[in-house]
Length: 87
Image 1: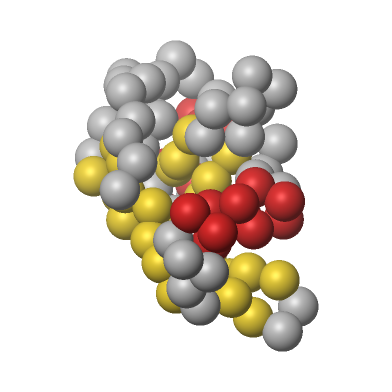
Image 2: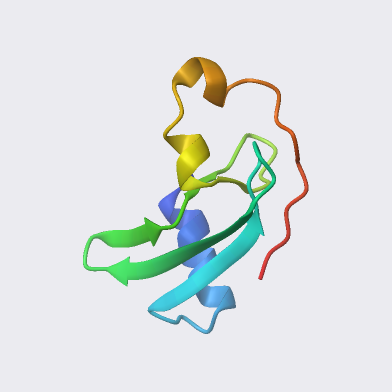
């Protein structure tokens, strides 16, 4: 599931309610470095540089833009790297 607004609000709170902050991690699929820039907007939050997912276990997973744009049959294949780190 794509990360929800409540999680983004908590992330903003952890960043002193900054209007702009970033989340740095490794792509869940290919393992490349990902920096997702998050900006507060009038309707919620905008994300650039990747996609954040929050599975039922509550952890955050990111995909780089290239992996996100792959066809579904490739996107859901076995990930190469599952390590993530928060900025």
